[in-house]
Amino acid sequence: MKKLILLLAICTLAATAFAQQQVINQGKSQFLLIIRFKADFQPPSNEAVKANIKKWQDYMAGLAKSGTLVSGYRPVSGGITISGPGKTLKSDPYISDGEVVSSVLVINAADMEAAKAVADKCPVFEFGGSIEVRPVMNTAGQ
Image (cartoon, rainbow, N blue to C red; front, side):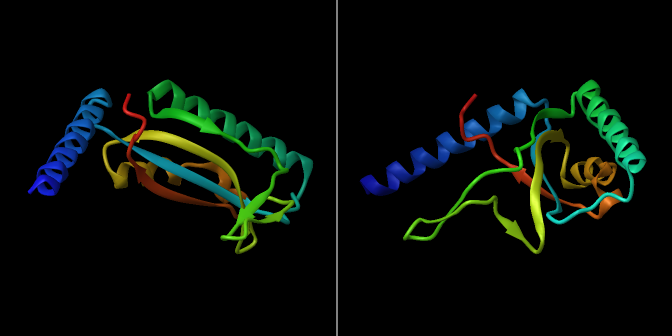
C-alpha cells in the first residue's frame, strides 16, 4: 500500500511539473533539433560556403527574433567517445552512418508538425545534412 501511495505521489508531482512547464512555455512544447552533417564533407567552393553561412545567420536570427529559439550549441570538431561497460575510449566524436552532430538547437513549437516546419527551413540540407526532431521534457524543474 505504501508503494502505491508513493507511486501515485511521484506521478502527481511529475504531472504537475509538466503542466507548469507548459504554462511557462505559453502552451508550447520544447523540441530538440539534432543537426548532423557528413563527416567527410568537402564544400563545392568557398562561395557556396559563404552563401550557406549567410543562410545560417538569417535562419538563426529569425528563430531568435520570433522567440522560437530557446538555446543552441555547436560542438567543436574534436572530442572523445566513451562506450560500453568497459568505458572504451575513442579519441573522436561519435560518427554514425557517416554523419557527426554539427549543432543542437532547443526550440519552442506548438507540436511536432510545427517543429518539423522549423527544421524544414534549415540550411543544413543544402549540403546533404540531416535533422532529427525530438520532443523534450525539462527535467531540471525551472
